[in-house]
Length: 613
Image (cartoon, rainbow, N blue to C red; front, side, top):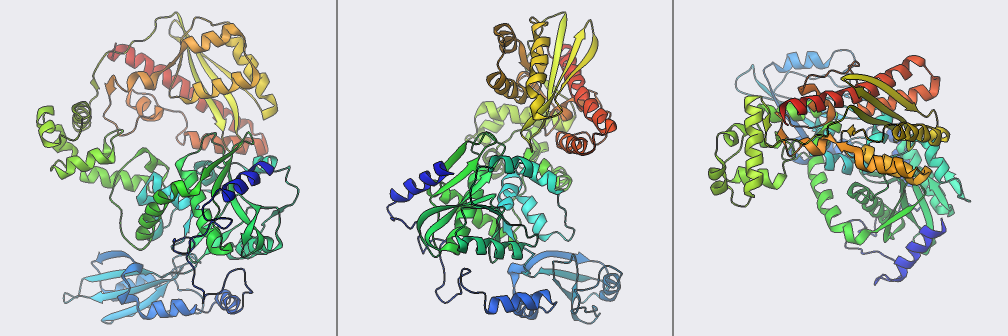
């Protein structure tokens, strides 16, 4: 890891702060000299942790429970329930609802009854029932106590916030907790499977792995390795109060810190070959945690991509945006509900149906496809707050109402509002489609967890009849063979348009031709003949839809996938299952899904030719 360490060393030497990049007034580095450093012996903190594991309520929880009614920061839900307190108490007394072991209390039906119920093993929730003058009404206040497993902010919280702030809010405060499967979380976080990660770090000489499953124990194990000065710490855990970070790697570099003449920088292993903002947010979060633990903040953040390339960025250059985002997240964790706004990122949230349902119930303008928050805010400030209102206005009226928004954007937004309210599509201009006797429809299936593109599916359509051709690689070692078979197929169809949906197929083809080579004829054919239907339809046709994924659009034009749980994310899970057991049934499901994708693309092309040419 010489390159990474050299970069950090160079960054430290050029810093105006000298060797130690630490500002005691910044949030991440601010410490109280009276507090015990995590690098000091555990002492009393260890005793408290032992008591907590034994089932005794921590002192802070006892204090919080005593002052529930006065702490608005921990108020997470306000529900007006049409029920007597006694009937609610009976509901709470059902099996599975009992309080934590040793703390069980039964709710009473008196005027100010307090009790504790167990939502899940790691949470302790205080219940306060305020009886109103009308006896059949009660107001239920559910207070989320800052228990060690409740209200935590992790690096994934920033990803969730960027995708959908309500994901963070509902994840922290909803009575029903929803989480994705670990494989799905890793997929969404742009992570790699552990086998691929180990391959990328196989050259590390002094590599240790944190193996503890419990977060607190994993944090203690990480601190031990940091005190020992190990070269690379894999899967470490950094904790400070309710902040918990999980950097893929902690790399030792030279420089003074509370540890001695060295300190650590955080590195993530990601499948993306580009630095994304969510990676930088996570890196700033790790740096803030490291500053609290080792009393030195790293100057650089690092991401290693699947090719082993180290991508770096300066923490300070991104820190202002990070601080603002962290402030918003802290407010949400404290109970402040964020403004509701639907984006395509909401699809990744386990609360997606609730987000869309709320937006539809309120007729929110955010339901328009690819609308910006600033545009919606300007319209709302001008009094245009619903899709129905927007659909009834002329473009001229909108220009007078919201002059800050461009006329072209106002026209598109108004047309989208009309399409949604009237449940019909609007053709804005004709789509130019090439004429050919034979057409190809192309879709790629990938396992991003392994950085592995394993299936090139092509539907060959001649005279309206389609034949499906799958080109499959059972392992990365077979990628080149799959590519050569695909290129040979293209060489036999040099003059055929190759339809696909979205940019992904072009990106993969470009990567493969650089990696494995290609004939001049095939390269020219691919560059000339690939047709992105999404790029063609977006400016030409407005659909009565909030999202323009292939499944959304193809469903509108009448295509149905054979598998009810068909999705790109699920196809990755299916492939992972196939790798484990080589089930022919699972492989058939994968092939059917890919074939459905190319046939859906064919259906969409036919629809465009009929309705928009």
